[in-house]
Amino acid sequence: MSAPRFLAVSWAVVRLSTGLGLLVGALEGAFIAGTARLETTFAEAALLSGAALAAGLGVAWPLAGVAGLVVGLWPGRALPLSRQATGLGLVALGLGLWYLAPLGIRMLGAGRIAAGLAGLALPFGIAGVVLLNARHWLRRAEVGLGVRPGWVSLAAGVSLLIALGDAALLTGRPRDPAPPPGGPGRSVLLVTLDTARRDHFSAYGDPGAPPTPRFDALAREGVLFTDAVTPTPETAPAHASLFTSLHPVRHGVLSNADVLSPGFLTLAERLRVAGWATGAFVSSFAVDSRTGLDQGFGVYDDDFWPTLHGATEIRLVEVGIRALFRFGDPLAVPFLLERSARDTHARAARWMAARTDRPFFCWVHYFEPHAPYEPHPGGPDSGGVDHRAILPREASFAYTPEVEARLRTLYRGEVAWTDARLGDLLDTLDALGLADRTLVAVLADHGEMLGEHGIRFRHHGLWEEVVRIPLALRAPGLEAMGSTVAVQTRIMDVPATLLAWLGRPPMDPGEGVDLGVFLRKERTTAPALLLAGRKAATLDRGSLYGLRTGRTADGRGSAVKYLLDRDLDTELLFDLVQDPKEVQDISASQPAAVATSRRFVMEEVSGLRAGGPPEDPFVRDVLQALGYLR
Image (cartoon, rainbow, N blue to C red):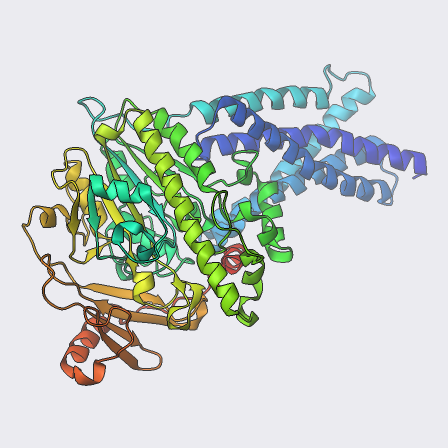
């Protein structure tokens, strides 16, 4: 084929593929509109639909360039129009494989062989249909029977109409169940503060704690739990326990690499079935929908893209992000890993404002206290310490006393900043007129080590600094205003407490205790708590287990902690009353307590697998960027 005819054929393939690209982009937009659990304005949805159209072109044009070269250079005497049709068929095949092959591969991996093979074969069927129709249309054009408008104009018009429909669907799709009878009813605002140490909230009276006036005020207006604990100092497992009222050894989420099975009933599912609107607004990949924590939420906002809400739902963007995590530096683009509390607050506030006339369950998750620690307006400056730059080389980084002191200061600033953002959320609740019918529960998933026991700025181990958490609860009509609860309070107890206040039955199955029994002095002792955690910063270094007991409601009795390293067959025992810093191991002098504790722990954890890296390469890359894998 001569050079002019070759260029003409190649250009024709690219031009005709514009219609295919627009159509598949519009169809991807329809898929996003039908499946995404994001709440957007029509303008945001229209921009997202437009981005999906652009992404379709972004995939189709490079494929068309390659297809044009192939059909233009292919030997033989095929006519130019036949080559153009073949090129269009090749583009259709490429587009089909781009969008459908990953689904087929996932089905094969899940053991659904027939469905997986069908997903892989479908692009070839699509390509055949496109090829036959392209030949027909192009032949009609050749003999002067072509229709107007042409293929590209027709495809563009249809795609635009579909895109507008996508935007309308994404904006107008109902996300809430029918409300229960009887008016607006009671609502719940659950706020989790990631990696927030208990002793960094001034309500607890620890010397040197940063001022946290909004948390302190909430505690004064409600109840402060002074011995609240997490079963595991890891984000996804702790939140899974918060929503299922089950210990991690029972719900199976033992690390951030695990996924909560749909077979477990969550608090959001319980309330949604009963008519509550449910919305979640999270700030970290560690709790995105991949974890299974989205179960029961009508809206689950885990899209952190700052300018185009929902952009990460687009496959081309998703593939680009995966490539960046695999081959680039994701820490240079922090919004891929986390979202600021202010942005999360804005989304949650808009969602609540649209539901002032019905009961709702809203979960808001703030991530700032988690590493890296960074300065905020009005808080301490970095002092020349760039924690984000330290993290990738943390294993070999030589911490000096000056760097450690500055990082502790920055962490204090992160907690204070998060407290102020909590205040913004409470102010929004007041401004919307919802405070008089909304229970507010604020807690952390776990704490952070700031150098204690040789662990710097991470949250592995099972020391008190990561196990004890802040927890305060404020509810209208709660007679115990300003009270404190001193018994050991577990994350699994929170769902039972919220459901009791709402007048709903407890989780079943569930291990939680309604904390109201301690306020009403109906009970003075709390259950012991099995502890599970990582031995080191990374998930592949093995696990630690333990047992923690608390004192009675009047401050009497003992509180002890037992720790077991099964791999090394070592165990420790601490008297938390006499030795709250856990520096004096008393296991040698208490053989009976050690034997009883070991027997209890081994019965609970026998048969558990050790935590390890996830199978999905992308999840491995993200957890590595967050510091959980090396």
